[in-house]
Image 1 (cartoon, rainbow over the protein chains, first blue to last red):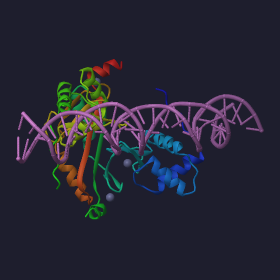
Image 2: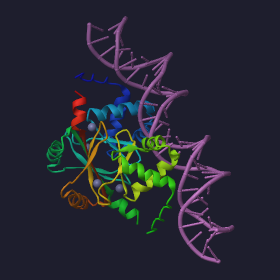
Image 3: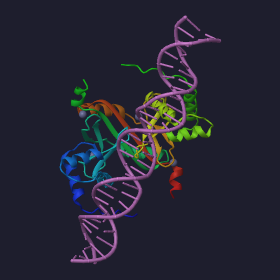
Image 4: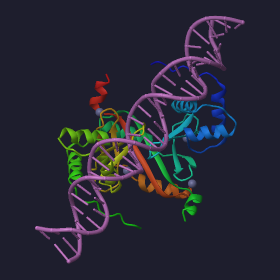
Length: 136
Length: 136
DNA sequence: TTGGTATTGATAATCATTGTCAATAAGCGG
DNA sequence: CCGCTTATTGACAATGATTATCAATACCAA
Ligand SMILES: [Zn+2]
Ligand SMILES: [Zn+2]
Ligand SMILES: [Zn+2]
Ligand SMILES: [Zn+2]
């Protein structure tokens, strides 16, 4: 029940949010850190990690875990509404998609198996048009 | 097109397969290694990693990546048929489930967005009956 | 303005996974 | 059955993403 305390508004967080607002694709904490450095920011890597985690928890950014275990983040276009993604596994481009009736279906199914506190992951990956060409 | 060469039949692989056949829940490479050690096996950790990877690629075992980036493996009940899981995030119990029309729907959707080589992840997690109680 | 406390960042520590490489043992042909 | 070729093994080092430390700093409520 401990409602999480609101994060302080700091220069670093502002810069990170700004970077996220500019590029809309999925990138790792380290990549975002690079971006910031190239923009003459001095944010520390650890801080980027912390901010992204925090933002992901509050639903302000989307987070996905790749097959290799890396966590990628991007700004979430859909506000805090729950949704899913169609993502290019080559270049990181992504679009928000709608999975009709999935939520309800999942909860229902889980219930019939005696499961509760349901959560789910639906990620669709592929090669976007450009990357498909490039791969020849 | 380079068809992968068939793995040699070795004592270690046999032992690993055996362990997988006995316990049916999702466990990490290290956990499977522990199991084997407790059964007086001398398999090396690296070997367990390699075997599980190989088996996962050939579809003989299921692999899932947790939020923390760990990869869990378990024997696959459904042979090589593509399928999905309902898994307890507390104790690791898991059941194979059927997601009607999802495959077709996903491919279709991706196509309309110009994506190809579609792959997808659908994992439903929750608390199984027992763990729900335990959590009080 | 000021004190209490979050946040920061340089750096060390974790920890799952992968790489290395000499020793070993499948599988094959003779 | 007997070497030979080569995949496999395993102890151990190396990697690489993420987390923990902890003193210095910056929010922000009072
Ligand atoms: Zn989103
Ligand atoms: Zn792409
Ligand atoms: Zn599946
Ligand atoms: Zn359980």
